[in-house]
Image (cartoon, rainbow over all chains, first blue to last red; front, side, top):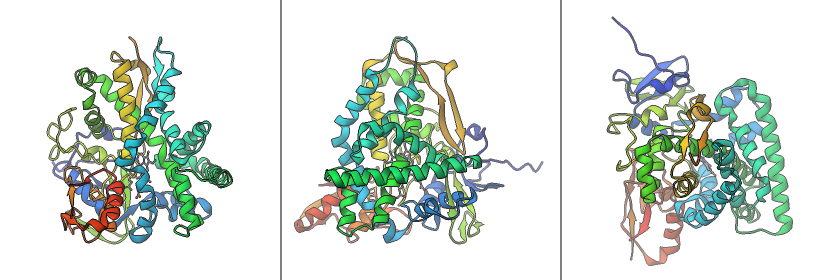
Length: 391
Length: 63
Ligand code: HEM
Ligand code: SF4
C-alpha cells in the first residue's frame, strides 16, 4: 500500500485533522500550494521575511489589478517590510499595546454593559448579532474618535472588505465597493476632525503625524484603512467562538464563574482550539527550502494555524481544553514582525464579554439546535450563535 | 542605571523593540529575541518607555 495522506486547509472538513504533522509530515502539498501543519515550522514560516502576506495577490486573482483599492493594499502595513513597515507599525503600536489597553478597560466595560442593557434576556438571544458583532466596531469608534453612531457602518465595512479572505470570487464587486465606501468614510471623518480640532484619539494622532510630515497623506489614510478593516469582523467571530467554546465546557465554565481571574487564560485556550484565522496565507518571495522541500518563488504557503495550534508535539493533550496550560502561545494572532497589532485589544474585548456573562449570567447555555459554526477559506466563523442567558 | 526585563514566556518575537533600541534587543538568526543588555542609562528613560508601550504583548518591563 502506498497511500499518501492528503490535507487541504480550505476543505470544509479540514477541522477533522487532529493537528500537527500528518504521517510525520509537518509540510504537505496539494493543488492549493504548500500547507504547514506543525507548530514549530509554522512559527518559523511566520517569522521568515522571505514569506509575504498573500492578500495583494489574492486581490489580483480576484481581478483587482490596479486602481485605488489595489494601490492601498500594495502599500499597506501587511505588505511592507523593513523600515517602510516600521514607519507604519510604530505609530499604531502605541495605541494597541497591553499597556494602553489597560486604560481602555473601563470604556470596554461600559460598551459591553450598554449592549447587554438592550438585550431581552427572558428568551434565548442571538448572541452573535446581538452582542459579539456589535462590540468591536464600537471599540474602533472610541479608538478613532468617531461617533458611536458610526459603529454599524464600521462593522459592515470591516466585514465586506475582509470578505476577500473567504476566497469567494463572486464577492469582487462587493469588495471594491466596500473599499470605495471606506475611503470616502475616512476622508470625511478626517476632514471633520480637522475642522473640529484634533483630540487624543488614534486618528487624531495619525493626522498630526501627517501634519508634521512624519507620514504622507497617503500613509495616514492607509493606516486608518488598515485599522478599520481589521477592527471588527475577526474580533466579532472570535468572540463568538470563545463564548461558544466556554459555555459548552461546563466544568471549565464553572471554574471561570467561581474565579474570574481565570478569564484571560480561558480566552487564550479557546482561541487556540478555535482560531478565527484557521489559515494564514503567505507567498514565497524567493526560492525557500523548508524541511528538504524547495518552495519555489511565487508559490503559496498556507500556514494551517488550526493544525499548528493543535500540534501534539507542542501542546500536551492538544485536543483538550485545559485552563492550566503554561506558556500557552497559539498562533491565532500569527507571530513575528507582522503579528497582530490588535491582539491586546481583541483579547481585552473578548475577556470583557466573558466577564460580563460569568458575572451576570453564570447559568448561560448554548442553544445547540439554533447554533451553527462554519468555515470559509479556512477561517472559522459563527453562522449563528444562540444563547439562553437564563435557562 | 535602569534595569530592563523581558518576559520571554510571553515574547512573540515580532522585533518592535529591536527596531526601537537595537543596542538592547535583537532578533537572532533563529527568529527569536535576544536581549543584548539588561540595563540602560537613565538618560534613555523616555526611549525605554516607548519600547514598553509599543511591545504588542506587554513583555517588557522596568526592573
Ligand atoms: C480576534 C481578533 C483578531 C484576530 C484573530 C486577528 C488576527 C490577525 C493575524 C493572524 C494577523 C497576521 C497576518 C499575517 O501574519 O500575515 C493580524 C495582523 C494585524 N491585525 Fe489582527 N486580528 C484580530 C483583531 C485585530 C484588531 C481588533 C485590530 C485593530 C484594531 C487588528 C489589527 C491588525 C493589524 C494592523 C495587523 C497587521 C500587522 C502588521 O502587518 O504589522 N487585528 N491579525
Ligand atoms: S516587542 Fe515585545 S514581543 Fe516583540 S520581540 Fe520585543 S519583547 Fe518580544
